[in-house]
Image (cartoon, rainbow, N blue to C red):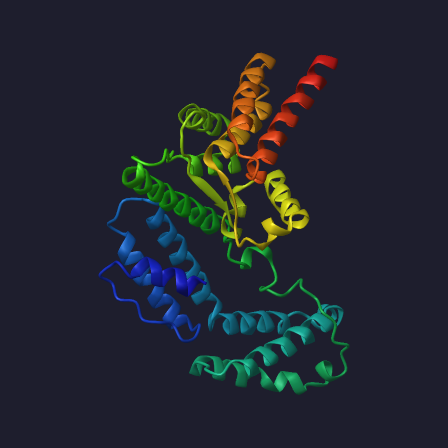
Length: 327
């Protein structure tokens, strides 16, 4: 996946990308250098931030090749200079490291000369009496490759990829709005609002959703939104569950490749959710209820997912209102 992402990031840049056939440290370092050359003089847009994270990932990968065997070598040498009583206490761990080192070397097809020399210098230790009589048990105390710090943290890269996707989807909405504004009303910030809700920025989501409701509520034609697997990350659990249940109970709906609802429905639902999260007054929620009633009257009877979604929003408001008044 890293190689695919780097190909996409580099294809529009003057730095030529050569496909990586194997994960060697030399090729990983080369790829990291290419990505760093691209971003060194560029502004820090989302794409440039992704390229920076990819550079880190390739550097991390490079440091895991070859240097991995050198780390094994140092670890084994460190164990071998410990005084005999301590070696006896940790002998199982020591043998385990030696065995895993030998196994790892045997799995690699292309070794550097230095790797072979290091291995040959330690191979005799595997036939020593102390190793042959040990019980080989797994011990991670001396293993430098099982600590959490040794794994690449991809959470920032994943977040940046989602941010980049939302930016591209918003650009797509803007192009749609300009091209089809004469025949359909399209708001351009629906994906922005979805992402703001996912990030917990409920105030921003409420602002965008309210603007969209005011623009769409009385429009003659409204843009649909497909609830496809790629978008599920942006929807909350209730919408995903509602869509799944609708597919289960409705055979005709299940036959369609993609579920869809329109922009005003999703904007009303997000508006409701944000008001509840932010604990808005009952008067504010009553106004949202009036918008929901208008939407319910305007939706055709065959728009089952739209009707169920606004019904869910209405139910949430009524439950919250009852609970508030009882308290």
